[in-house]
Length: 268
Image (tube, rainbow, N blue to C red):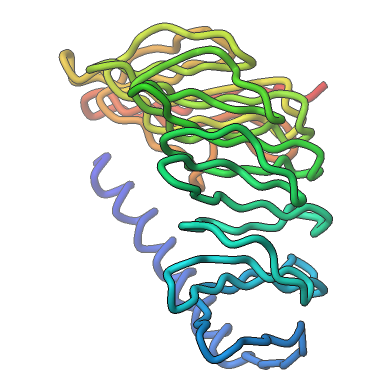
């Protein structure tokens, strides 16, 4: 019976997706907007292009015949480096950042200012209000977050899924240390688990939840604000989210042939 119910839900979801996709194809109306000019000399080639969310600013990465890289932002070419990676505008388009390599070190260039040098950089992220930035850095075989230009201090083997809360006043990410994973929220490390599949803030940022897999016992559970939920054979996240914008928190837990709806009203 449970399998039949899940099959009906899946068929309905796919049918809705196909109708939406079909309507999108029928109503496609392409537009063209000039966002800037690309100026190159005979020894340069364009490697990548980035533009601000509103399309008002243009940046592109070039590489010359000597293997040197540069970023041209708003029509002005910057310094040359041995490598450049993930150029990105902030959500409001006011800030622009990219990783640059000089010799053996990588450093972040934010609004034209160079940060400290590291062995490797990844995961450049801006807060939704564009006032904060963060990225993961690796030095001496240890990885850590650099948030607003400052080393957070916690060193791990690897970092994934960094995010700011919607208001930008909080942050969280998954840390990996040997065979364990854990959530670090606002600089505080949580318990060790086998695997963390999903991490998410509520729309107001006051709540944090994540989905955990216990690989030894073959169970899954959700942790909400540091409190572990019940074990299930499977956990189904509705619409890919644990939190709804209105403040509702819910997911489906399946144990044997029984499906349970777990929910909580977290609205203020």
